[in-house]
Length: 265
View 1 (cartoon, rainbow, N blue to C red):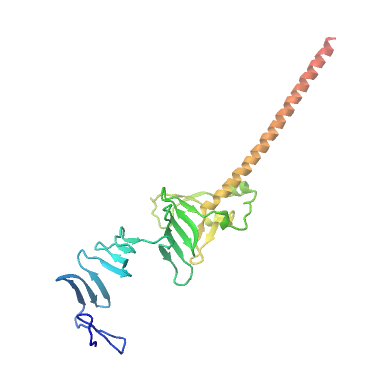
View 2 (cartoon, rainbow, N blue to C red):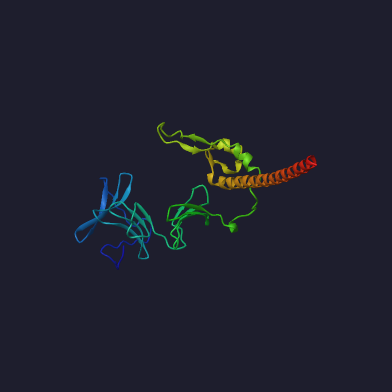
C-alpha cells in the first residue's frame, strides 16, 4: 500500500480503520519478537485473550518520550516511572505529583498517597488537601491539626468527669476471630454514642459504626483539668479550715489561760 516503504514491512491504507489483520485457525497463536535470532517475547491471542509476553530474563517495558513509564521485571515486579522496581508494585513520583490516586467510579472525589521529599513522610490527601502523615522514624500517624485548617473552634465543654463515669470500657473479640484469639480493649460504639456521640460515626454503605478513639483524648484532658480544679478548690477549703482551726485553738488556749489566772486569784 506504499510506493515508498520506510521499513521491511510498511503497511499504508488510505481507507478503512483496519490496517493489518493477523488470523489463525489454531489458538493460542502469536507473533514472535526476535532479536538476532533470539526470541525476546511474543504477542499472543486466544482463547478470549490478547497477551504480550517477555521471555526468560527479558523485561516488558512501556516508554513515552524516551522515559520508562511502566516496567514488568522477569520476577513479576511492576515499576511505574522506574526502570528498577524494588517491590511487587513500585511507584516513583516527582515532587508535587501524587504517587497513587484512589477513586470510586461513582464519585469525583479522590484520595492521594504521596511521599514528602524532605521529611520522607507518607502523606494522605483528600481532594488535594492534606489529612495526615505516617512519620518515617517510627511509623507514627499524625493527623492534621493546624489552626489554619479549622473553623468554629470552641471549648470541649464542662461536665466531662460525669460523662466519663458513664462510659463502659469492655474486653471483646471480633466476630470473625477464633475463640483463642487475643482480646481487644475498647468500647461498644452504640453505648459510646449515648455519652459521646461526637466520636461515633456510621458508615452509610453498610450501617456499621466506627469510633474515633483519638478524639477521646481532649475529653480526658478536659476531665483531668476539671479534677485538678476541684482538687485546688478542696485544697483551698482545707487550708481555710486549717487556718480557722488553728485560730480557734489559739483562742481556746487564750481563754484557758485567762480562766486559769482568774481562778488563781
